[in-house]
Length: 260
Image (cartoon, rainbow, N blue to C red):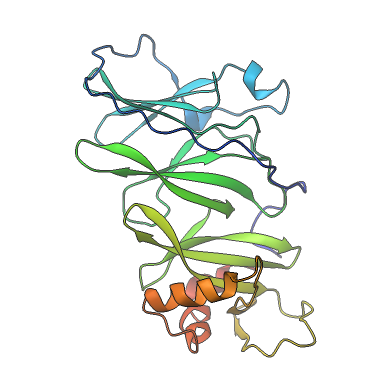
């Protein structure tokens, strides 16, 4: 049995590019006028359209600063600290994700500091597309770190890489592992994983390693053209030998938890 919940099928459509962050040269000395719902308690319906739902909620950060989240327009963010508005930024989308969540904070790299995840498309059985905004600097600001796709269960390797799983079929998928390059997400390793017995390509000569009920190897996908060479270079840049990467990562305990 696959250890993740299967959702309705769908794909992520094109969407507007994120708008630049606006950081005020002077703080706006104005506290939030009302107490807002915690965004974790908000469930978004597929109807009416997102721009008609007028969602407004907040996220509390570890230092007691707060992030106000608004769908007017979706998604708009205001970072408040000490009664002042210190940053405003947007992640534009008109799509409601399959899981119906608002923006959320999650510790994707198990560092103790969460990032802001913003679902940017409908998604489907494979997972959801998400923009990642990272907290950085003093005073704290959010910077757009990149995008990822899949489910919101995140794994961390002993090497310090982190990533998540996305379905590619009912018994197969991929795990994309990242590292930080400054404040940007940098893809480090991509694993092809599947349940034992799932059909493999006739010309597949890769080393498949069985770990629990998961068969695992290094991805050889080259779409778009040049992607494989880019990933191989990224592995080397991260200190990973592509020749031994399957043994290095596929034998780790978390891989065995992907399928049960």
